[in-house]
Image (cartoon, rainbow, N blue to C red; front, side):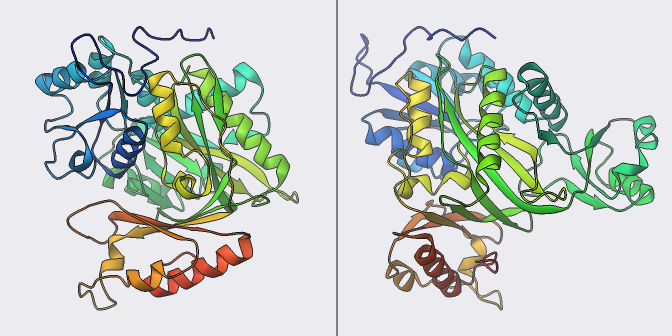
Length: 416
């Protein structure tokens, strides 16, 4: 694949002013917490920012120079965003592809509609992973879980018996465990598909899971690519609870393979921006286990939040650099880290009564870095913030993380 050329108007440097007098402005589709952290990163470099989101109280919109309060497909809103910005990115993968295409007609958009479209559909995503492996050979030893596409009754009835037990996943709009059903046999599979309204789905064979990990990379317009070491993740009820990022958190050979696979996946589609690829580590009888590629997120990822305090360059800094056509520095991690996800449950006691978390006790812990997202209402399961723990060594970081979890009543740390 030929490398993309630098789009007209890039690089755009912070602090510059266009001929029309407009300060260098970077835009983001989506006003959630990822957009908020992108805005902070862009502003630290001196850029103005613009957010398009229909929520008047969106976390990113509240801290941006410009907040365009409109639907993601609204022509007037998109035109306003395009008129303000030198380049645009996205903070979540379910932005309408048509909106990204419309913006790309007049300014650089990173990632582009094609890459985002792949991540929006599990069927296309698995085809992309397979094609990436066939093109390069780099994914040797890194495969998808055995799966079957189910879009018709005939495909349902033709599912091989060896794919069961399995997990039925909707092809679109599935995240944080939503749109997923575990099934043991063909009868449960048929019932689950009916419950999901017979929308296109993927059935994945259930595998003996040992651990989960993810790799985050950033790729520029010129094909340059940098990234972070793999981080190990623990999910509770389908939502990320804990990320562990430290040297030796997984076998070296597997870590190198996961990094190479992620870069191959990014290169195959000519990706521009920050990309996260999630992997399963499964028991195949070997000492290390085998890597299974699960899914990709065309944006910064919850599992990369530790980079804000444990690295000299964060995933959000790289998002800014990539979209603006700036050089991509190879990030360096200076501290081992554990990230604890803070859901709205923390704002309620065991009886469901609202409470204020004991931030004083948490912030008294050594190496504790609290990041709250400015959301006005706490709800169970809603991502409200995260807590990064850093320190001189991983033993101390784990000890502090256990203390923080005990103070806040957080799950997912039983393995530490």
